[in-house]
Image 1 (cartoon, rainbow, N blue to C red):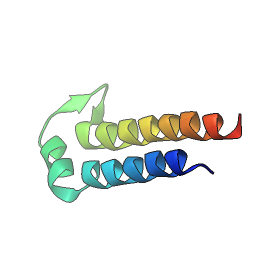
Image 2: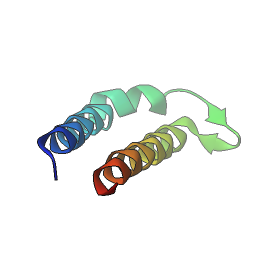
Image 3: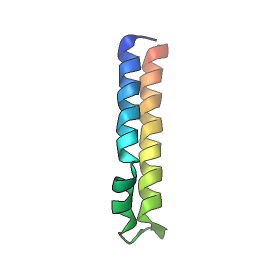
Image 4: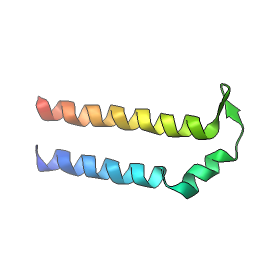
Length: 64
């Protein structure tokens, strides 16, 4: 794996760590609902799906 791809994955991991940190998650716990789901669940799964998509793009470029 190229150093550039490793660096992107490390940055993604650090961003996820900051986004899933307790104080930031508790901000979304105070709001109402979105499509019948509490905002905290929507926030967690939205960030997770975005992280999977970004990882897929980075790793796809690696294997080309």
